[in-house]
Structures are given as structure tokens and as C-alpha cells.
Length: 445
Ligand SMILES: *[C@@H]1O[C@H](CO)[C@@H](O)[C@H](O)[C@H]1NC(C)=O
Ligand SMILES: *[C@@H]1O[C@H](CO)[C@@H](O)[C@H](O)[C@H]1NC(C)=O
Ligand SMILES: *[C@@H]1O[C@H](CO)[C@@H](O)[C@H](O)[C@H]1NC(C)=O
Ligand SMILES: *[C@@H]1O[C@H](CO)[C@@H](O)[C@H](O)[C@H]1NC(C)=O
Ligand SMILES: *[C@@H]1O[C@H](CO)[C@@H](O)[C@H](O)[C@H]1NC(C)=O
Ligand SMILES: *[C@@H]1O[C@H](CO)[C@@H](O)[C@H](O)[C@H]1NC(C)=O
Ligand SMILES: *[C@@H]1O[C@H](CO)[C@@H](O)[C@H](O)[C@H]1NC(C)=O
Image 1 (cartoon, rainbow, N blue to C red):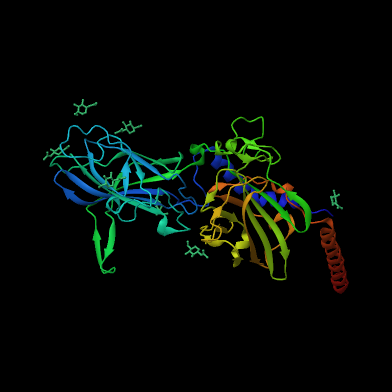
Image 2: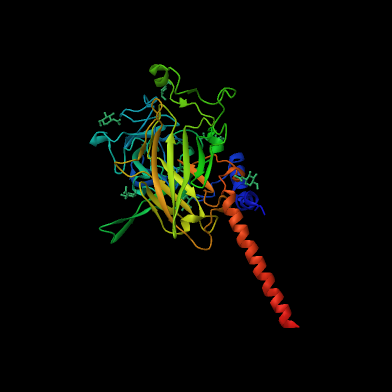
């Protein structure tokens, strides 16, 4: 009496697999973060004789996608003959041809490109909430560091104050993948003053929303997931060629085997150099079902870095699993639950604890960089089971990128012992039911 384990699970997981497949094909939004975006606002809060002073804010609303090193790059095209007289909290990469002006100008190019200042910028170059080296935290992890602001003084507009918003906003954060909408007039930004008792508003606000598409970013996958359980000797490893194949595929990065005698100069010259594996991913996440107790179950989660050059600062991992509907204890990572708005299973977001494991170190020789935690989950009596691979995650993301995972058919399975135990129970139950039926029939006559 063999159960139909994989088929049942396949049905449960199929819709989400289809969604993920669609996402990788088209410019699709992330169903786990449907409202995620980066919003750029221009708040005009002062008029000048020939223009205005604006505070520009880049706010990352992505729940678990941060802007990593080397940071954001913002660009736009002026609608008229604007020049930037001065700027604080950031700088334009080109000054351009300012020979038409008698006073010194910061940038006279038609399409300025702006970069953030470093945290050690001089006080005279700073503005409020500035200078993070272009890094923005994910919104669900650290909202206080999820935005960056800078001030520009725009002029050369004459006395005519019918200004136009900048056009064709571009955002690299840090690479391509972001598309920004038109810069539009919106309700003026309101902020509070005098301990929140007074509200002040800027004269005028323009804003644009930028969204990410991994399809546009054209990135090779960067993560894969492997699975194991105490009840099975099988380890479901990362699917082969998850992030590229070892030799045949020339698009995948270079790799070295730990047994190779490599030169250290070879490593430093290759930022994408990873340890040779069947999956070739720079990062891997392993989910091991460790123990089952009366009312709880324990998982060990390990994140490994196969890259020899890159360490992942402020990494995060997202796990979608129905078990998170019950309170869980995450021992060595910081964690929060994300709203799912009734879509699919619960989603837990995990990241490092400050001064302890926020940095996932690069691989070194035979040693992989890794961070690990145990998670103690409570059992929900109605749904908990070890059957059909239920205890494995539905989806795992690393730094906002979907981790390739094997199909449920290959998940570690319960040994036959327990299923025959189950069928014995079934047989006893059937006999019992038959007896009752017989009794009732007998009663009838
Ligand atoms: C951008 O994100 C914010 C916060 O999630 C949301 O309120 C806003 O509607 C989003 N904007 C767009 C255009 O989706
Ligand atoms: C710089 O701008 C001035 C005034 O607009 C112009 O006359 C001059 O030719 C420009 N120089 C260059 C090198 O483009
Ligand atoms: C910082 O300010 C000084 C003096 O105001 C200026 O000379 C310098 O170019 C500024 N540096 C940057 C990076 O904006
Ligand atoms: C301001 O500019 C607009 C269009 O650029 C024009 O229609 C208007 O007449 C100008 N006003 C003044 C006072 O120059
Ligand atoms: C903005 O981009 C559109 C389409 O690429 C282009 O037609 C338009 O000329 C651009 N506007 C400016 C001011 O560069
Ligand atoms: C967890 O993250 C929150 C928000 O970033 C932070 O305030 C808190 O201190 C963190 N806890 C630990 C133990 O790192
Ligand atoms: C368990 O059952 C499957 C199919 O019923 C069979 O192929 C497999 O050999 C069995 N394994 C053991 C360890 O008995």
C-alpha cells in the first residue's frame, strides 16, 4: 500500500512553481513582495531668484532587497537649461561645460549622474540623512537606513517659475535591473515639526517609482537550496548547473577546485571566482530537519558562500513554509514575519545579528564561508507531518534572488517502515469499520 507522496506535494507546490517560472520569463513582480519599489522624490522646499532648492530622497521600499556595494547611481535629463549651482550629501560625476556662467557651478551637464558620498564626508559637504556610500537597507530589516537624501540648488531658469520635472530618471542599484516611471507631480511631502505638534509641507513634490526585474538585470542565478532530514540518508543536493555548468557553459564564471594549486594572484584578479561544484552557485542554503519533539520540531539552516572574493555584508534569507504560522524561535539570526496578504504560505525573513554574523565571509582554501542557526518551530496539530516532504520549504530566497531547489519528487522520503506502520493502522481501521458495519447491519435485521 504505497502512498502517493510526491504527486500530492506536486499539486500543492505546482501553482507557486508556475508563478516563479513566469517571473523568470517576463518582467514580473515578486509575489512575495508585491508592493516593493524604490521611490525617488524631489521635494522643492525653497525658491531662489533663478530656480529652487530641492531635497532628493531615494527610499527603498523593497522588503528584502537591499542596495549593496558599490551603491546606487541616479541619473536624469533636465527638461530645460537647468544647472546645479551646488549640491550637498552627494555629487555629480561630471561638472561639464560651465563657461557660460560667471559664478562657480557644481554641474552644467544636461543629464547629470549622481553618486552618494562616503560616511566620512566632510561636514561642509553633508546634508541631513546623507552619505551612506550608496547603500540602502531592505525596508523590512532596517527602515532607518533604507533611504538616502541629498540637496541640490537648481538655477538658470530665469524669473519664470513654470518649472518642469526632470525626465528619464535612471537608477542603477548597483547594477541594471531597475526601471523608473515618469517623474510626476504628487501631493507635497508633509513632515512634522516641534515634537510632532506642527506639520510643515514643501512647496512642490515630484516623484518617480522604480521597480526591479531580475529578467532585466540579466543576472545568472546566484543561489541554490539543498535539503536533508534525520529520517533519511538521502541528501537532496542543489540541482546540477543551477547557476551555470562547469565547463561547457562559457557564460558561467570561472571556478577552482580546492585540490587545485592555485595562485593567490589568480584569485584576486577574478572577483567572481567560486569553488567548483556541480551547481556553480556563489551561495547555497541548506535546510536540515534535525529533530521532532512532542509539540515542536527543529531545523538547522546553513548559508554557505562559495565565492573566493566576495563576502556578503548584510545578507538576508527568506523562507516560505506553512510551519511559520506558529511562533518559531530562531536562535542565531534576527528574524521577522512578512505579511502575505493571504497569498500562499507564511514567509519568514532572516538576517544576521549585529556584531555577530551580519557578514557572510568569502570561501578560503577548502573552507566555505558560512553562517548557521537552529530554528525551533511549534507543531500545528492539524497540519504538521513529515510525509510528502511537507517539512521542507516551499521557496527560499537569498538577498532577494530566488534559490534554485530540486523538484519535490527528489526530496528525502520517510523510510518505508513508517509508511507500513501507517498502513497497518489503516488496516486495523478498515477491519474496525467493517466490524461496525457488520454490527449495524446485524442491528438492522
Ligand atoms: C511603492 O511602495 C510603497 C510602499 O510599499 C507603496 O505605498 C506605493 O504604493 C508603491 N508605489 C507604487 C507605484 O507601487
Ligand atoms: C562651452 O559652452 C560655451 C557657452 O555655451 C560655448 O560657447 C563653448 O563652445 C562650449 N565649449 C565646449 C568645449 O563645448
Ligand atoms: C566638499 O566641500 C568642499 C568645500 O565646500 C569642496 O571644495 C569639495 O569639492 C566638496 N567635495 C565634494 C565631494 O563634494
Ligand atoms: C514662462 O514660461 C512659459 C512656458 O515656458 C510661458 O508660456 C510663459 O509665458 C512664461 N512666463 C513668463 C513670465 O515669462
Ligand atoms: C526620454 O526618453 C524618451 C524615450 O527614450 C525620448 O524619446 C526622450 O527624448 C527622452 N527625453 C529627454 C529629455 O532626453
Ligand atoms: C534585529 O533587527 C532589529 C532591526 O534591524 C534591530 O533593532 C535589533 O537590534 C536586531 N536584533 C539583534 C539581536 O541583532
Ligand atoms: C521502499 O519502498 C519502495 C517502493 O515501495 C521500494 O522501491 C524501496 O526499495 C523500499 N526501500 C526499502 C529500504 O525497503
